[in-house]
Length: 291
Image 1 (cartoon, one colour):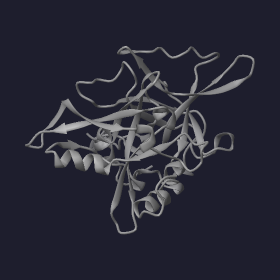
Image 2 (image 1 turned 30 degrees about the vertical axis):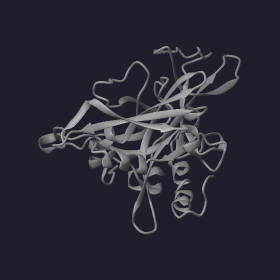
Image 3 (image 1 turned 135 degrees about the horizontal axis):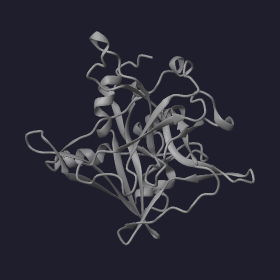
Image 4 (image 1 turned 180 degrees about the vertical axis):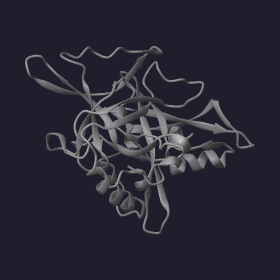
């Protein structure tokens, strides 16, 4: 299945994802966010950072990290830029449906402040063009290859700052609403710290001349946002647990053991991301101050 513009998207994926740390009364909560640019009526774009609501819950302050560039434009991943935000949870805008575990934060002013202070950085924005179109989503098979990009506690490299990719498959059809909700399940390791991570459809790289694989990455398209894991008790009961990473005294806190078989990841579909679009436009125009 050809994905328009997917090659460029693949090359920039690492710079569209950010590690998030939040200071709460019970310690540091960690998660993943991704940059998304919403298109405004005047053709301009509003840059936002999207993550899961549970990642920022109770955050009195927080920060996200991006890759620094030097004066010559060379990437300096070993010296990441830390973007600190006071009253982090209050600065986040929840999804209009309170049952949807998503928030966004406008980051344009924060990034502009870095530029004004002489700091340069590498950030890539996802947008509508990164989302798999409805007509292509309808042609998906039940089993499709997917990748989750994020910052699992203890597994990401702070020296390179690049996110970790966890590969797997769709456990339920990505085009069908699981349980009547705009979400689906994936069979991917759901490590703490991956809450808010983007989930991408991965298509094989096209074959090159002579039947060999071309020297290029596979195509990708945004399918949704990983926010929880669903587990099943052997007695038949099920439960959904948010994927949040916690750190105390500088050490990761092991997550509680879940009963039953290996849990599956729960992914919010991209329609839930696009639900923000009219509200972003209203806020940019000053029609509303908070929702």
